[in-house]
Image (cartoon, rainbow, N blue to C red; front, side, top):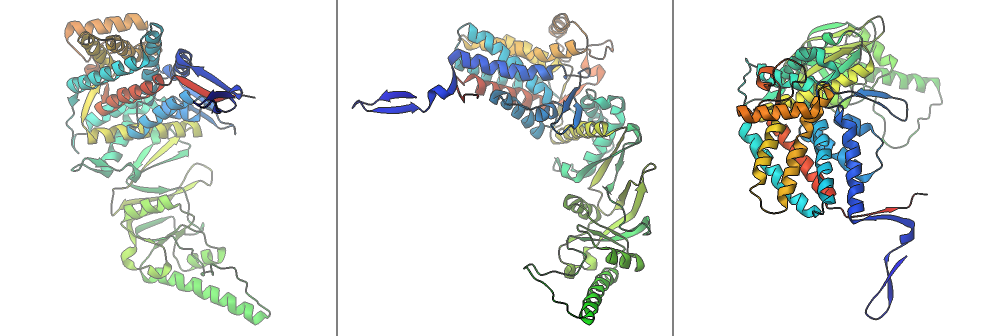
Amino acid sequence: MALAFDEFGRPFIILKEQEQKTRLRGLDAQKANIASGKAVARILRTSLGPKGMDKMLQSPDGDVTITNDGATILEQMDVDNQIAKLMVELSRSQDYEIGDGTTGVVVMAGALLEQAERLLERGIHPIRIAEGYELASKIAVDHLEHIAQKFDFGVTDLEPLVQTCMTTLSSKIVNRCKRSLAEIAVKAVVSVADLERRDVNLDLIKVEGKVGGKLEDTELVYGIIVDKDMSHPQMPKQIEDAKIAILTCPFEPPKPKTKHKVDIDTVEKFQTLRLQEQKYFDDMVQKCKDVGATLVICQWGFDDEANHLLLHRNLPAVRWVGGVELELIAIATGGRIVPRFQELTSEKLGKAGLVREKSFGTTKDRMIYIEHCANSRAVTIFIRGGNKMMIEETKRSIHDALCVARNLIRNNSIVYGGGSAEISCSVAVEAAADKYPGVEQYAIRAFADALDSVPMALAENSGLQPIETLSAVKSQQIKEYNPYCGIDCNDIGTNDMREQNVFETLIGKQQQILLATQVVKMILKIDDVISPLEY
């Protein structure tokens, strides 16, 4: 253990069991941290852009995920290093706040760390590098405001929103259906949006999937789809003008909450108990009929006797429906969730124009469609696909598209994609560096070089020569004073992203730069790493 002595010569312990810990200090610690961050960024770099590659991840229990979504890749990686965990948190923050750009933000952070390593080797203090990065990030964010354009859209003209969502879906497995999926995502967001307040609650959009069919069969249902079937196969499969009782209480006789036992010592007592239960079931069914319900949706199950009684009394029912689904059904149908059976009244019934049970394929898979609801501000995107992995990846892609549409409704400013925004910011930051006489000037120039990493990765992933392509595009931007020139990833024949209709949200791009800068500053300020010895 490490000992020190006070002014009276008494020893005291500074760090207990020092010999049992590994320790990195100063430049060694900073280089080790930077190496960890760069390693994570290298993994995601090849997944960036419309020609990015996918990753296959296998969980300990054998589940396989195929995706190029940065947040999902990092979420499912088994990461031990603490700096690598910071990069995972960085991607998760971007996903939580913006919903898209999770790969780009990690690639950007990795490039900033790489540039910082070169500056550290030249003897520049990490605090001065961090300060220079902070100045450069402000310049870049302000420049994005300068080159951004506003999109005008309305309920009748949703094309700008669709084009931006198509840009997001271009890098996904589902890009062959990007037009139809983008339209579905935009219609879903507009259905639940409050355009006056520019507010969108994505919780009102349910994304459901079923293996089978084609990706092109994906549809938007103005209502709710429940992955259940009628409680009895002989119940009607279609109910028009349905009045729905939404129950969270058990459809059975009440039971004491304390421990109890019933002593039955004669046949007569058993028959009496059975008649009481039958009467209770009968009264519950009659109560539902009396208030006008034509369908019962229950969070809990009920036994075969109650099920038979419901069939006999011609009252269709669905059981074991989840709490979140019940809330969405209540919102869509304008009904109220009933926690106690005695509180059921006709005013609490939900209303739907059509409730139907739909079968899929040759299997027994069935789902309940609740459509033509009183309140259409709850919708379902129903995804079809050839296998479970395709369904899950489509759900992730749809989530990104929904978030992009939501962000555009909140703030309708856009920048152009294809790396054009990063190249323009790089030129602006490089030009601004000369105004700073201190050591920060080197850090600001390094930040400009790091911004170039995104278009270089796009070019590299598209099979182009990265340095040659970037030089040509940057030169074109400066000569033509055109900040919309980017990497022609799809080989269309023009570098102008306006002509290619490649858009990204302004707030998403700004958030990428700010989050990446904050994490890199945090990593640079660590100069001592103390960790337990591995046995």
